[in-house]
Image (cartoon, rainbow, N blue to C red; front, side, top):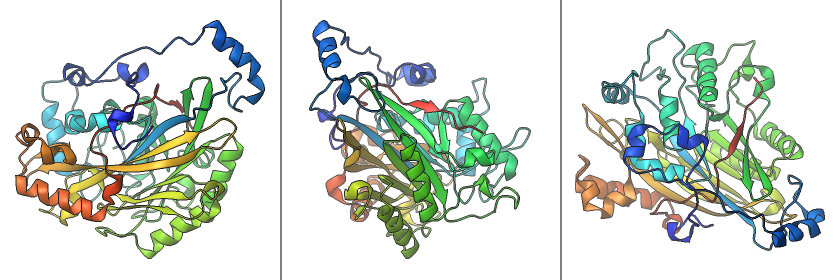
Length: 437
């Protein structure tokens, strides 16, 4: 499966089972959720083929069909999620006629196809959830309402990275509350921990493809901290060297992981190219030979995709140096113009019988914020805004602003990897294995 065009994707059930049960009514009313059932492969000829080839089965399966066709799936990563004050105000207003205090889903709903279309979708959760009994707060010390988590789940995220410079903004109670709420809504998490035992564990996602189980290990680390975790619990926020992270990735592979993804919170704010620290850390991970894909965050501006030498089996390691912003209130009115636009990064993974998995293609698709100094209106797919007049009529952005943002993100990113249509999932959503906290 290639992420570069939706037309090449097989049309299969869009996030059935658990995901369909947690979709908000407003998504259903928009017709954004498709349902379906898997095909029946239990005919006798297929069973005979399975029996003959059991000896060649994947180490994760009891019986696999021997086929020349590889198993493929797509992993996506999205940029920073930060609830500035205007976002809190908008989510509170959207919840006025409901039984909840905040509703973040509508702010992200236009991006749902680009998130739910990936087989494994990861967000960059930069801030903590406010501890029970506390009040949400925006810049500069963040604490988000618990309703943010189901909002992310509704648009299709399967999990998030949590190791960031804002992870301890709401204290240790905020760190723990964040993970508790993620668990409550069955989203995975990596980067922060409630116990030292949990801190040493990656988040494992299992993707069932036919009779084959593909295990993805997700790690998250930050190179930047505003507030350090307590001296007696330094493990609460992952902040480790590339060598230590490589050792953890190697252990994950020894424990059965087929793919290793790292979310790295690093770099210089508002930078458009990776700085020396990013490059040194990224190359050290590539040299370690255990990491397949790195998803970068923190600069709040997009930075290019690049394949570094090294990686597993010397096939190279892809790095998204920075995905920029996803859900924030930043744009040219407060910050540099590039903060208004982030990129969703896609990586195609291919796994053949008796061979290791590898990243075969990468791509990116831009999203942009629609907001004024008084009101946050949500995020939109920027590529669609440039060529869809009807969609442009739904936003307050001027045609000139849309075009300027579109031109600039193409200058920063490599246009050959641009994706203008959302992907479609290849099969059922991943199983999230709870980390042992």
